[in-house]
Image (cartoon, rainbow, N blue to C red; front, side, top):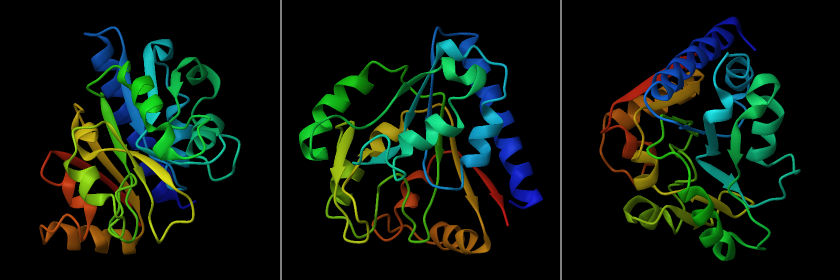
Length: 221
């Protein structure tokens, strides 16, 4: 972990904590949507130390692999191990999987569960892959067009480049937020983002679906 990335994580945690605190001053509950992967781990750990009314905060994920919650590939496990610690353990965490064997079978149950969250989200923290995907909006996914266009909250996704089936909030659901943040690190991701900013084909680089709304970018080398 470089000093720059640690500082970035701390600045992002401060901004998210401030946003949640502001929204809780005028509403009973606030919703935070986070992303998985390795990039957000230091951010999760920094945010967990913030003094917030955690018992009034809902947390869920932008997307999830359809795996057991105890699997090392589970984003829910990542959140529990790194964010739901200390005071932050009082937050109401809603995972995106069910006991159904496939995301296609489980998507309705998960949609019902997430409908009761405190929408619109206070903050959506997105990540981005080297292929320009965000959440589970992958350029090579058959379901990309559906996930970009549907008014349904969640979409079951199967992607040739990914070993596990997934579930993702649709672009429309992820747009239902007061604030959008993109958290990325490394020169390669910066180059992908620069490419995305210079074009408009969302299917080529799905992160473009969020470049038309105010997007705070947190980047470190």
